Image (cartoon, rainbow, N blue to C red; front, side):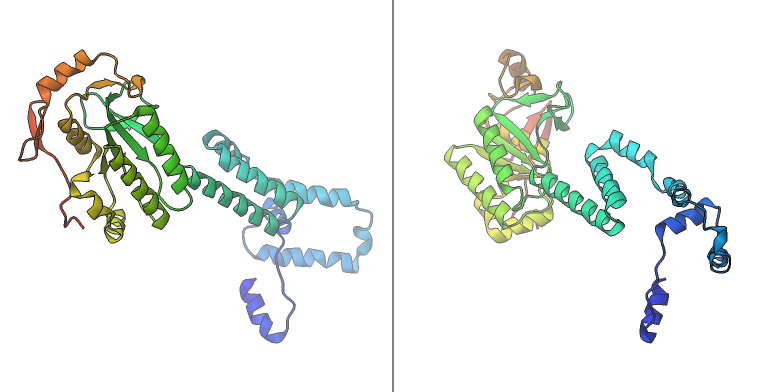
Length: 317
């Protein structure tokens, strides 16, 4: 149809289009090839020559044919799947369906796209964030809300932000971080930047303000898993030079080890404590057996194995 309208436009031809319901009727009748359109055209000639054949057929019967043929176009299985998987997508499906049914196809698509855009902006403005804890006996860190058995370190706040940092969520980033900072009162903050794949000017300004605040409070900030793209922007801004390469680490575990090496009074505790120690004597033994202060060579002994603290050199990027 598009090609026919394109060619016909050079000859002042009337634009043609195809109806969704007529397509549904053909599909319901078992049409397999475009030849079905020729048969439909022949049938449509009958009312011209024999109008009395369809004169007494009531309009509800014709409407019933269209409704029955259009019902297979409604994918109810998809709606049930969206309801089980994600309620927001189901709401978009319902809004698009109702608007298409009662307003029009074009209007329904536009309204559905607009609702989807609003949900995307809302999710981007308030992304997920989590306080992380260590899986006992490993180097892995998970959300303390999902796994209560995780271990956290007193005076060390490990925080992850799961979105790019830009003008839409910069205020949310700052408010959430300050709330955690006021609640836990840490001496060390480890910012897990694995999910922060981009940053803009507003995000840089917020991050620079946080860096200045932590310097005033004498709180050590460690950034773990910073993407190369974000690192380059920090270097251009001057934030990388302001912090220094000793504040950047390859992963969260390396950053936490570095923090604990500076203050062995930090002890392991269950995540349910939410930053408040329960029995320091139990974990102090673990620290005395498996952790010593960082020496001049930058080596930390952990679990009777010596590991170098991983930091970014000045020429990292």
